[in-house]
Image 1 (spheres, rainbow, N blue to C red):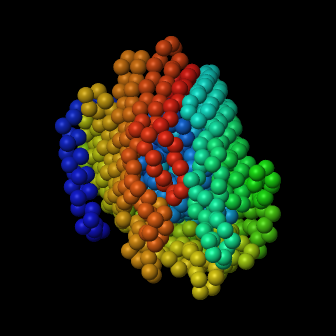
Image 2: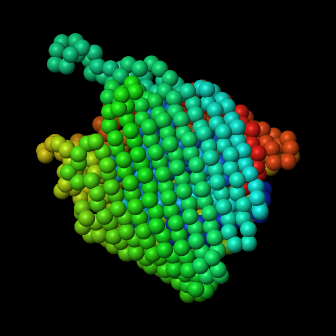
Image 3: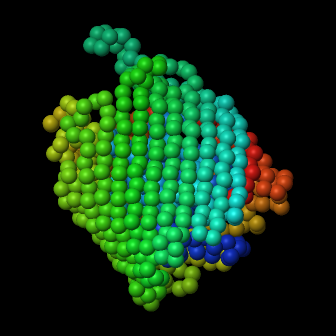
Length: 630
């Protein structure tokens, strides 16, 4: 794949970073331990991270607790390929752009259960409670060949708290307070015995917030002299916009005998959100994921897994306490997957999957449900120094018919320390119910959005740590946008996204250093906007984390930043770039007890990721924890 000349400077910088890092001594054991971490999202079967051909990032529970992040958005901000746009603080509507793709082009899974709204198409990232998360796997690139719709930019899978690493019995507790009247409490128990394991966690997270939007309402009468249109939220509401999230998760597993294994999981988060808006300014929401798996392990070479799940994305919307609208999405799924480990170097899986989306609303849609049935298969093999992963999937949907997708990934271990990889894949995104069936607006003739991706990567593993470089190009066709010719949505837009990601993980004089840098060219290929940047996506983003322990004390800092972006496709409304520094410290003052303190946005940087919507200034949080992080 040819890389644009505009990436020459970033590429040279990436090489310089990698070369410089080799001068530092590091812990080989820590680096090797990370690469031995087992991941499942990029292949739908367990693989060591060092074997995975997908571009994958893993965030553990220990990483979450050491970061002292207050939300999922804060935890993911600035990581390789990830950008967010947020409408005014905690709990406010947020969009995630993975590798520059649209906000509904990333598939969110919670314990294997698909999440998201059938009406808007996006996932409620802002409502997923960080306190309930055990581990996160971020897989970048197109994965419709394994997961179907939505996986154009990649897949982010969240695993809820579980008892797999627990002792016979343990417990955890968190109490925290901070800026903007923030307060949090979490309590949980977990354990395991000879045949089973369990976990239960409850949490309450609340903040008084700050004024979400600096916009204004329209002034005067439309069509009359002196009329001034509104901006941003189209409302004059200079108030504090609070947020509350109450959540519970439960996870249990039972080994019925040597061959049969049963697993169940549940996550429920109830939210109340205040924001600024002319039609609605309050919302009560519910995010829910329920799942179960029954696995039959014939022997070490063959297993059969039956799974079922259901997710909910419910929203009740109000204006100053008066109900205005309801949008409730329920997504059901079931699947059967067979795994064959033919030998140490060859694996085959095949499966079938059924999904149903149902939308219930006070708005009467032309249709409010659809079914999807799919068959998929994957072949994974090691041939000497080469690795191959070939996958394909056939989807049949009630609304748009048949869709075939595939992916081919290849890796070549050039030496013990160096591996090169390359991949090709295509993906699609099904139209939303709003785009298809909203009364007076929808277009039932819409086709799925389509994408095809090329990627080239290089990864190094050394005694001093590791590094990786990924270059990619993703071309997206049939993007859905408003078509003035038919006064409805149409498949009228195209985009091409070229990018370069660089990551380094090393130790410098006892300090653990992790850096992720991303350069993007998210370019529109449509009409009068051809050559413009796609909205709310910066060309440059990055994150650097530095941590060190001093006996019972630990210190850490993070620097995140993004370049200038535009709030509109015409590139007429620029949003300035920013850099944000965060500091944190911890003290383990007794067995199992830790006192933590964090200051975010230390220099009180003012910036916006969506026009007119404020972001938090300098904030602080003090936490008391009980229970060991893993």
